[in-house]
Image 1 (tube, rainbow, N blue to C red):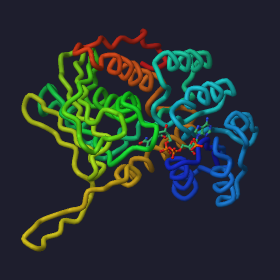
Image 2 (image 1 turned 90 degrees about the vertical axis):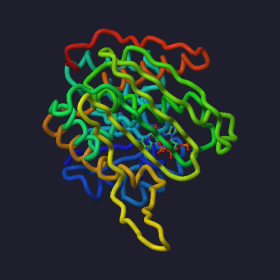
Image 3 (image 1 turned 135 degrees about the vertical axis):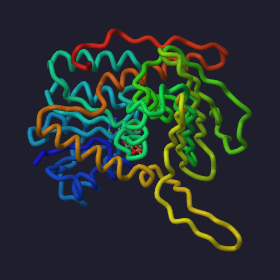
Image 4 (image 1 turned 120 degrees about the horizontal axis):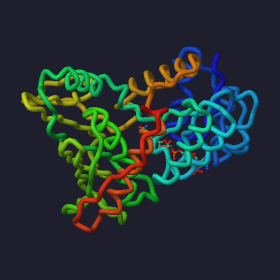
Length: 333
Ligand code: NAP
């Protein structure tokens, strides 16, 4: 049994604790921590595990063999660095850090160990729809990929949400999945503001459009709506030379009634990618037990943050910005 400590007992933290406890073979959650003490105490009582006062105390605890980080974005980099310093395997929810500079520190810390200890929570790579799209693209049957049209629509955002987070927290999923689907790297990008939706009254831009150009000249457009008032709607179409591949909508029963054909659209990301999260954590535990991580790496987390930084800097300039990374270390080849 891999003994796991989870830092962050909010929405996804509680969902991952349930998943690791009830579904994932070989996993045992033994500890939790949260900035909000009552949240950790409640989870600890529910699962009969230890609540630590701080994330740092949890990481240092001898009973904790591996760490899962599901706390708010600004805390990720510090907890990842502390976990690496303790020599422990760590799974960090996206984004890996708030900026590329912090990701570089994480890469340096992992390189010092000479082996991968970190996986980033880009769970869409484990979604059956995206995986099948990648299989078809990689088979070459449709020729070279040319363009991606994608959209990421959320129902609403919590207080404190800011325009930049539409890229660094929300579209960060597309920044990872598009380069993974294409097997390509980014050259440049920009963010455009469009006519604003009446659903956004809290001071952040909504919608925004992310435009990307890859090294091979593919073009990507991602519509980012963080308050659409109707559903959690993720779309992706890859246009290739001889055809297209589309991300399927999730399983839903079609109803025919009142002269209408209809099916429900999910509103919660936990339900939309439930199977992908299950597969992601199951494979992570297996990989930790085998001592060889294969899922999204510190490098993948870094590239997404480099792209997000460039995109956020482009806002309001009307210009594409270069997306430039450090040289890729051998560990991540
Ligand atoms: P949430 O419900 O707000 O939960 C975050 C929890 O972490 C809150 O209880 C918060 O406490 C706590 N926290 C904040 N700073 C902390 C710190 N320094 N140390 C310990 N705990 C701290 O948010 P969420 O929706 O679960 O998201 C958590 C993280 O997962 C985010 O980084 C998010 O981007 C990521 N996420 C990923 C996916 C995905 O699809 N892979 C989906 C959802 C979320 P307070 O409320 O007191 O601040």
